[in-house]
Each structure stands twice: as structure tokens, then as C-alpha cells.
Image 1: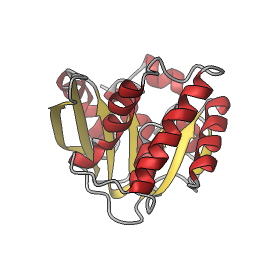
Image 2: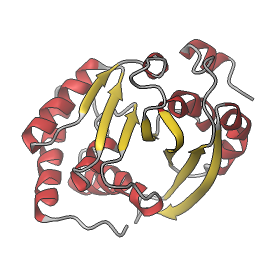
Image 3: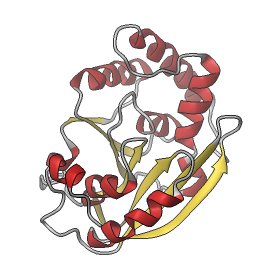
Length: 224
């Protein structure tokens, strides 16, 4: 992936894997618990973002629906200079993230909120250089959750599994309405874990204040 990890980063990934497995026995975080699966399908998959996107030093990034910390925590391990906000609506998962960060001696902002509500608050709306999400929702709906966080000139980075082209085609109008434009989409094989897609969406204009709508409206009446 072209990502250089020093000894400290590798040590932190070991701690992350160990704690992820321990916590998973108490809270359902992931179905992937074998060492190779965690390394490839979680860590490497998250770091693949760097294969496509160039994040300047000290860039502000929000990970929407971070779950067990992917990709946000993995990105922070590789690049501790990044200013990362980890957003999730499930408080229990964020408590796990807090414990993992503490044990790795890393810092990030933990935000317990629904994305559509946080994106309407002045301290988060259009305040980030990047937003990202991994396996959260269809790109059309996901764009309405993620683009409002990104400042003009910033980028929403969506990490998808196989066959993302259909989602891309179906999301173009929604992305345009939200002030975005698809910059590029890159498809590649993640070792033996199958096809992955990374979609870069540039924020070219401010998002209308009517977005994001409540989650029920986003799911029932997606932008088309």
C-alpha cells in the first residue's frame, strides 16, 4: 500500500488486535477475530485509504460510524499527526475505543452522536478536511451523512467492498445536490480478501442547510 510503519506503529497494531479480541468477547464488535483476518480485513483494508488519498500533515478527519475504530483508529496509528474525530451512535463501542486509545497512548476526539445530528452543529459542520466511512451504508445515503462535515475544497473518502460502480452511478445526483463531485474511484484486490473500492468525492460548494435530513427521511426518500 506504500505505507511505512515504524516499530511504534507495529507495536500499537499488536495492542489493538489483542484488545479488539478481548473486548469482542464482551461486546459484539466484529465477526473477524483471527490474527490474519484482523490484519488484512481490518488493518490493511483501513490503511488502503492512503493508497488513493493524500492526507497532509495535521489534516482534520472525521470517521463516520467508526464502530470498532475502522478506518479511523488504524489511520491514527499510521499517522499520529492527524486530527481525528471518531463518531458513532453506539456509546458502548466508543467506550471500547477510549480504552484502546488509552492503552496505545494515542489521542482522538470521541463523538457520541448520530451523524445527521452532529453535522447540523456549528462546531462540526463543514469543519473537516476529510470525512470517511467504511461499510456503513449505500453511497447515496452515506454522502448525505458525510459530505456536510467536509469544508469546501475537502474530500469525502468512501471505502467500499466489491461492485461499487452501481452505487457510484446511483449516487451522482445526490452527491451533486450535496455540493460534491466524484473525483475518482479506484478498484483493487486486497490480497486474498477480494475486491475493494475507494471513492474520492471532492466538496466543491457548501452543502445546503436543508441537509442532512433526519435518518428516517434519508432512508425512505433517498436523494435521486
